[in-house]
Every structure is written in structure tokens, then in C-alpha cells.
Length: 200
Ligand SMILES: Nc1nc2c(ncn2[C@@H]2O[C@H](COP(=O)(O)OP(=O)(O)OP(=O)(O)O)[C@@H](O)[C@H]2O)c(=O)[nH]1
Ligand SMILES: [Mg+2]
Image (cartoon, rainbow, N blue to C red; front, side, top):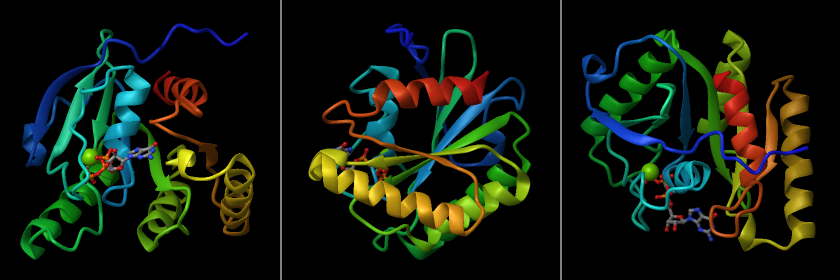
């Protein structure tokens, strides 16, 4: 039986880090949310936490400009990463994020898994593919939320998911996909369970 109790309830803002030394101590367990700019990372985080305004969302890509850390009541953490690939962000800042995020993913010992957010309407980006390859290479569990599923019909969404599953299987990456909509609530329960399992 699926519990209606939300395992990610009660998340609260901890800090926004522009530099590695601003991150919380590297102990315990955390899961990071990554994806291209505007994919819906912050919206997904809010939907999972059941808290509409926890992470800032925006129609303007490039909204999340730091590593934003939230903690559950038991201390485990959720980390909202800045989106990759937003052209209007100054090159120097983009370079800084890229270095910081790469470094974070490679060295963060408490990182238990990655939630990759990818718009269900689009093909996986180079960035998405790089993240999936990276997770496979270091054995970091990855769950892919296929976001904005409300923009497609159920059948279209199923077809897109099958295509993406095939691409993942062809590359011998290992990642579960979940059609997801922060707006309609699609896949929210399943994604909560998946994130809770990563944090367990
Ligand atoms: N229709 C629909 N729109 C969504 C969904 N999730 C996010 N959006 C919209 O997509 C836009 C971007 O959402 P964010 O959650 O801010 O995206 P992000 O990935 O955090 O963006 P950055 O922080 O800029 O990288 C906003 O206008 C959201 O309202 C969804 O499930 N359905
Ligand atoms: Mg964001």
C-alpha cells in the first residue's frame, strides 16, 4: 500500500551557497535536483515537499542562481541546483556554476542520488545525457522526472517516456523515469517515494 503520508514533508530553507564553503557540513544524506534551465526543478521540489513556495520558481530561465539547500525535519537535505544552459546568464557566472556543480557532484560525500528534471516534450539535452553518463560512471543512483507532463496527452506522454527509457537502456545507463507534473500532480507520490528511497 502506498502511504499518503509525505516522506518529504516539512522541508525548510537552510542556505543558498555561491561557494563550496557555504554548503552545510558534508555529513548525513542529501539528494540534488538538476536539469537544464527552466525544466521545472524548483517547481518539482515544491511539489514533492508539498510546499508551494519553498523554492523560487519563475517563467524567466536562470531563476535559481545558487545551490539552494533545504532540510527535512530529520536533517536530510534536498538541494536545488542552478539550471544548465541558460544563455542570458553572463559567461563568467555560468562558468562559475558549472565548476561549482561539477565539483559538488564529484566530491560531495553525503550526496545519495540525483533527481534529473527533463521536459517531457523535448529530447534529452547534451547536459541531461552528460549527467546520466556521469551517474552511471560513478554509480550514483538517478531518477529522471519527465516534467510538464500536463502539456501532453496521456498517450503522448507514455510514448515520450518509452523513447527516453529506450535511449537510457541503449546507453546502458541506469535511471528510472517518472512522468511528472508539478501543476497537475502527476507522478508526485511516485517521485516522493523514489526520493525517500534515495535518502534512506
Ligand atoms: N505546465 C507546467 N509548467 C511547469 C511545470 N513545472 C514548472 N513549470 C513552469 O516552468 C517554468 C520554470 O519552472 P521552474 O520550476 O522555475 O524551473 P527551474 O528548472 O527551477 O528553472 P531555473 O531555476 O531557472 O533553472 C515556470 O514558469 C513554471 O511555472 C509543470 O509541471 N507544468
Ligand atoms: Mg529553479
